[in-house]
Amino acid sequence: MAEFEPRVFSGVQPTGNLHLGNYLGALVRFVELQDRFSCIYCVVDLHAITQAVNIWGGPSELTRAIREVTAAFLASGIDPQKHIVFNQSQVAEHAELAWVFNCVARMGWLNRMTQFKEKAGKNRENASVGLFAYPNLMAADILAYRATHVPVGEDQKQHLELTRDIAQKFNIDFAESIAENGHGDAFFPLTEPLITGPATRVMSLRDGTKKMSKSDPSDYSRINLTDDADMIAQKIRKARTDPEPLPGEVDGLEHRAEAANLVGIFAALDGRTPADVLGEYGGGQFSTFKVALAELATTKLAPINDEMRRLLADPGHIDKVLNDGAQRARAIAAPVMAAVKDIVGLRPHGG
Ligand code: TRP
Image (cartoon, rainbow, N blue to C red; front, top):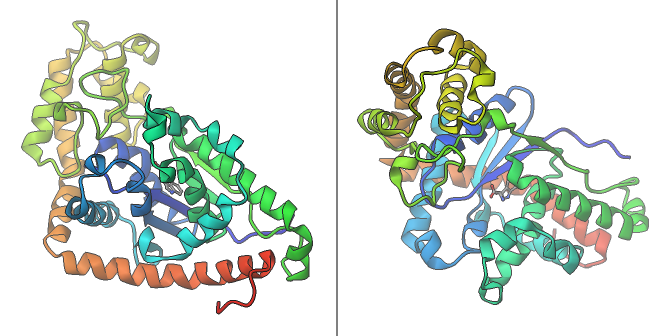
């Protein structure tokens, strides 16, 4: 198959507050990948509006959240000059390519998407058409840049498989035209997911069996990236534990979800293995461990928190970063969309 230039694309929805799970599971990974790939990081605002208005909070909340996710990208260490940071709705090619993909993907494929079933809940008739077609827009996000690698959590694996199915069906359905237009034997790459492992899966501080989530009604279940040092320390102090001391070995964390979570968070924040952390704190009480964890968490997160506040105090600057990123994103996506039109036969067109 044709060779594609390596490129990373990933997206984060601007809904609710970003928390420690997003940071350790996604943002840290995004930052690392900058050394090895040319990266595009997108605030996927068109995806945010697929759910009911009361879930994403309405127009002013959406605008605020777009800027907050952007600030979190920058504060975590994403370089918007070397790489590209922008919001999806500014680059019309995403929606345009998504329409073509609406005509490539099959109803049966989308009917199998577990995230749609979860998000739509019992009342599927009342879900938006956008929520059903969400995976097609996600495929368009990725393939508008012909991205080869996408860092995502385990929960997005199925959407990445669908993206590959769409790419493959397009490549096959239009094979002749793709060749005639000078693109060889494939126009879209079969994108590889870079799945973030369970080690970076951060669980709720109130229930170690549930994922840390922005939709949990208890704010004590998560550490928000906008929480200050006092708040972080308080949340860790109140985090649920069990009555036993910490085990000396990783095996001892089995069936102790809360202990495993706190040890995992410590390890991820400090760039160590859980075994190493238990080597130091195993056999000790949670009270001692929590003090150390609170100190570590505030030390690591305070600079990000401070930088986010500084950035959010100047929304004009954030908007400039997004506008500049959108312009550069468009420069890549527009020729891809024009080529898609040629391949499909949507001629003449201005691209
Ligand atoms: N669906 C992703 C999520 O909920 C967000 C997303 C949208 C995305 N478009 C993307 C992730 C493209 C990776 C690539 O997390």
